[in-house]
Length: 218
View 1 (tube, rainbow, N blue to C red):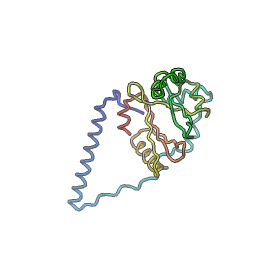
View 2: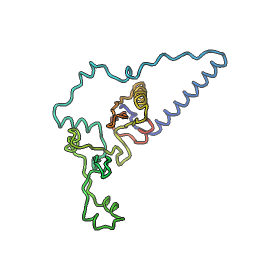
View 3: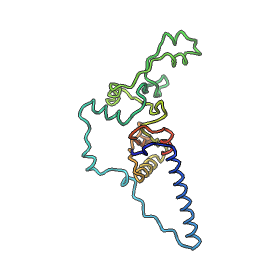
View 4: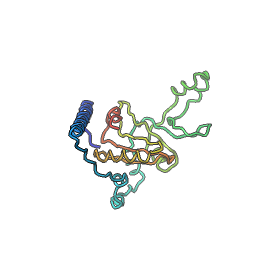
C-alpha cells in the first residue's frame, strides 16, 4: 500500500485536521441551504457491496499460484510478516478449548523444581521459544498445524493490518469496510474466519509502519 515517504505522525494529524475542516464546511453548506429553503440534492443510489468489492471473473482466472512449495512459502511470508524469533501455535487444552500459545519447549527440570506458585513464572523464564522457519510455515499451509504470528515488531511497527468483524451483521460491515477502502484507493482483502461466523479484512503495507498509525487508519 503506498505510504508517505517519511511516515511522520504530523502527516496523519494534518489529514485529520483537513477531514474536520471539510466536515465543518459541509455543515455550513447544509445550514445555508436550509435558510434558503433549498432541498439538499439526493445522492446517487448506492451500488451493492458485491458490485464494489468482487473482482471480475476474467481477472481471477489470470491469477496462478507459484508451482513450487518454496515459492508458496516465500509468497506467504512476504505478506504475513511479523516477528521471526517467535510464533504461536494452536493447541487444545484439557477443557477441550483451542488456544494459541508461543511455540517452544519447556524446561521441565526447572519447572518441576520450582515452587507450585512460581512454576508459571519459571516456565516463562526458562522455556526455549522456536523461531518461525520456512518448514513451520509449510506445515501450516499443508494443514499439519495451525500457526499464528506476532505482527507487532520490537520497534512497534507492523507490516499489515487486520480488521476483525464478528457481530451479527459482520457481512455487511466487512463489505462496507472494503467499499470504503476501495474508494480511498487502499487494496484490502476479505477472508472468512475459521468459525464461519465472521470475517477478517487484511491490508498489507509496502514497508513497516508505526502500529499506532496503522490502528488510526483503521
